Length: 328
Image (tube, rainbow, N blue to C red):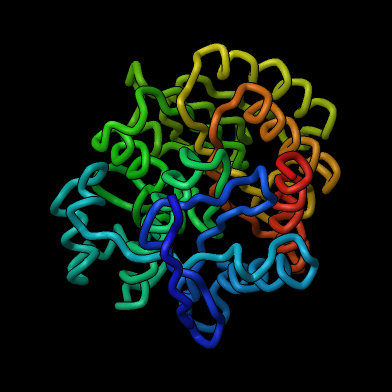
């Protein structure tokens, strides 16, 4: 089926907007990646979250020829009702109306603003669009998301809504899949994802993270790998190589890959010791396993807090460079 494509502008950048089912696929070298400039949230001066990385990654992917302009698609906000598939209605409504408890906003780490509301609903929209496209063509990505700390009735750790959980519930509600695997390789454990989806027979949650890092109260996933401080490339990759076959033996219908780059040794919130090459090998292992097993993969950006910020930006760009190398 052909797709109707509409060119739109988002702060001067031309996007394509999909109104049908894509006929493109990675076979002909085309990849759909979802983005919006609302991902870049206006924050108070000196705020510690590297919010500029989203636009820098988008620009870098084009400047380095990893992705072409026609491969970027505009993320659209979803309705509050859709987010309520995974979150308590009163919490979603409070976010939308600006009546969130002050302590919850403090745990989130962002001030409430109308821009935060738009950003939060749009990140979920990009994640759902990416997952649907992955089911259609094999692979897709969202240049944000992986907000795995958001709990059923609260946000925390720079996460307002849990896009991984909402996507999972949406795919089940639409009858698009029977089993979902979340492969979370951010340096921080996906406590929110586990709190929402843990214990489900149709969900496999795999989290490999720093044992002594945030969150300090971890919620059990299907499998949690707790890594000691200063874990190196070889140690990390050996454990991942042992665990990946178990995930695919479970036969998921889709993998939601949280590709956080904060295991990088230069990351200020990481405490692990992976190199850029180690991160590249990590991503390659995940992508090659998905491709070999014929399992669609939707990529969420995840965390990254290196200083200077260009190290984080290059690590995120590298994830898509590896993705392109594996899928063509």
